[in-house]
Image 1 (tube, rainbow, N blue to C red):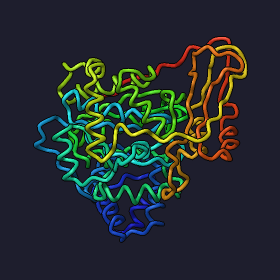
Image 2: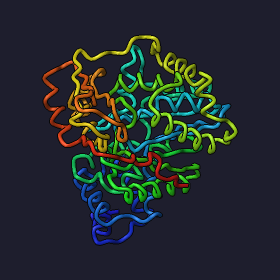
Image 3: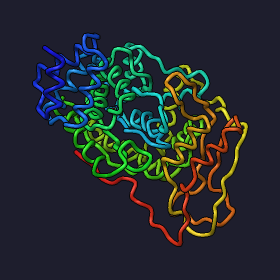
Amino acid sequence: HSVIDVIRAKRDGGRLADEQIDWVVDAYTRGAVADEQMSALAMAILLRGMDRAEIARWTAAMIASGERLDLGGLPRPTVDKHSTGGVGDKITLPLTPLVAACGAAVPQLSGRGLGHTGGTLDKLESIPGWRAGLTAAEIRAQLGEIGAVVCAATEGIAPADRKLYALRDVTGTVESIPLIASSIMSKKIAEGAGSLVLDVKCGSGAFMKDQRQARALADELVSIGTAHGVRTSALLTDMSVPLGVAVGNALEVAESVEVLQGGGPTDVVELTLALAREMLAHAGLSDVDPAEVLASGKAYDAWRTMIGAQGGDPDAPLPHAAHVETILAPEDGVLSTLDAYAVGLAAWRLGAGRARKEDPVRHAAGVRCLAKPGDRVTAGAPLLELHTDEPDRIPAAREALTGAITVAAAHAPADLIIDTIR
Ligand code: URA
């Protein structure tokens, strides 16, 4: 094979043969295809696209670059969830123990945040003692006993994607539906769950800003999962407004615990229950009502056991920011915009996120949204709290919020759950 022929074929708008795909993904993982060659191919794919069959094959090749976790033989049906990422999206935290308490096993292999969206592992690491790293044997054992694991992806999962994603990140080739869909699904399929529910977000705080693109991505994700024998469906959900009140690591853990204790913001509860119902349907447990299980306290018990099993103390106080500054409503009326991207960026600048992979996150940093679109506000009433340990970060966070808040005479909030794609 010649990598130049593969690049030329896609550059000129052709389709890649199965053998070409298998070869180029494997050769790149082994280092036999250079970064500059793969980045040329990634750009050709971004500009020319891939058809369904090419995407399915590309995904299979990325799965084959590493190991596939074997979750067969567990006493419970396995079902996983993946979100394309958003601001204040802490749903994995209440959802995983809830679905486990309903009788399924949820292997939630997660990532860290980069840019304005937070990562699940960063959030959980604000719990004293909690550790993200488990071996494949530990994951299996914990799934069998508790049914709930949230941990870092093991090194062996889809190494081709790890390498390619880092390359795309620095070559302007992230924003390609075939590359995004194969990247997400190669990891999820390699994690070995029997079924999968995707939360595909659209709006300013999401990867996909518009609904048409988000729908196209959701269709592609569902099609890849189905082609690989994994029952897959997707919820298309709004990410133009932050999810819940809390944005930031420890703040989001605290809000998740409120939900597990039967309270919490209504949007977080609504999305958690909708995703739980979809997951339970895939797992053959649609007779279990997750709202009842949540109200019974069993999901909270599962949370405590899950956190404890990974060294965390569920009763330990969470870190609190040394400095809290309040942003006030500019006038009387109804809050009509609270831009998710701007709030995510503000939280990031307060220290909740990282600029480079190696940077630490500040666990206490973030934003609390005291009003949401549709709420009546009065001039001078508190709208947002900015939490940080470093007050010199406040001006940059305030600047991120310029134009992010509008107050109008009336406002009907958009639907959180836009559609379900099966
Ligand atoms: N998330 C992924 O895992 N991969 C992408 O390509 C984009 C988002």
